[in-house]
Length: 546
Image (cartoon, rainbow, N blue to C red):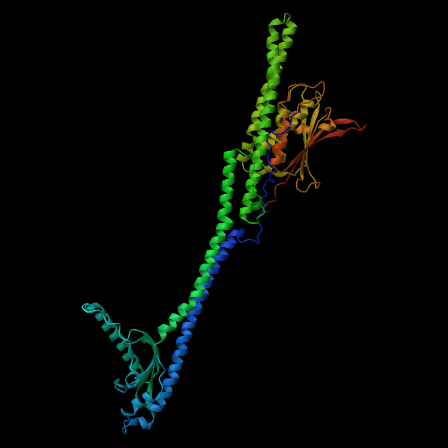
């Protein structure tokens, strides 16, 4: 009988089945991807929140400063509108002698400036002018004798003059708008180049606008500097998070990948058969998946190399047997004297040549099987049609004395499976050829196709029954081993290579199926013949994803 596969292979997935999916609890199927994204988003979130808090704080501080200045200005304006600080009837105006005293006698906090303008926008009083505090800074140390004096920079003086002009224009515009009767609150540049929070409100005597009182606070830049300093902790925390993320990426991604690369190089350079990184295989992320996949891959390659070596040794042994017989017959042929003995040796040579040709053909088919299985994509196959065509070919070429081949299939039910028609056709041809070789002359090989629920994963079943001597019970599994050629007495020797059933099992398992051998019992309890059963998964129903 024929035998087992040529090359060991890992258990394949059923046709149409998808690869096992990663846990959906991971981000996009990736733990490391989720970690990287979370760290980057966290650092950005920290900066974003810090910027929002800074903007809100800035607006809140400026608004609070304006409200405070507005309350102070309204209080001073109410006092300035009193008759004590105005003169003239029926058109009142500021008393230029008493009005400045009000600004002097009322405390103006440090960093604030109060100015009073009349109806024409001319300044009447300035807290900087009436204060008793003399502004100024200590003089720098005296220079050594002979040190040249610093010459003024014309460009800098021009810029300072332009800035001063812009500051005065902004103040004049604010005063002019306030003279129209509407209080103003702005942030504008001062004559010294700093930004100030300024409020200007009209001073009224009854309904008559006497002028404008302007209060300004020059600590805006200091406030904003303090806010920038307040943002620094957010920036430092974001920087620390980024550094921590980079360190984690190095420790958990870069270094393990480098270790895997070094281990793979060691396998290549030392010609090892396996790779093992136990501390990485226990990880539950992509690095652990990669380590486990690499280990499984090297183990599979090692098993396949062992199978190839064993296969080569078996091929060498199997080829030597007919070659030895041929050489012995050729050496004996010149010594044969009678025609009957010469004809006997000639028949033996022809039989060994046929056996060698069959062996080489099956070895070639077995060596190409992996490539053929991987070349074509599985598709839906009508197994009823495939078996009908195969049986028709056998019946059309039937010779006298050969066993008939019949098929029993459900009428009106076309059984669909996912697979490759070429290799599957080889499966059933090998099984039919094996059954015919053990059938008596003129016997029948019976194929049956059916569905059942015995194995829900493989509901499609094809049985091949013959009327031969059966299989020894201890060999029901070994018949699928390669180069198994034990045959009962009376059967033709050399008609099989011992690879047919091995190829059958390899193809069936590649399609997610299973093939088994058994003996059929007759009415008396004896062996009525052998039965081979192939169980295959059914194709998914139309519109249903596999």
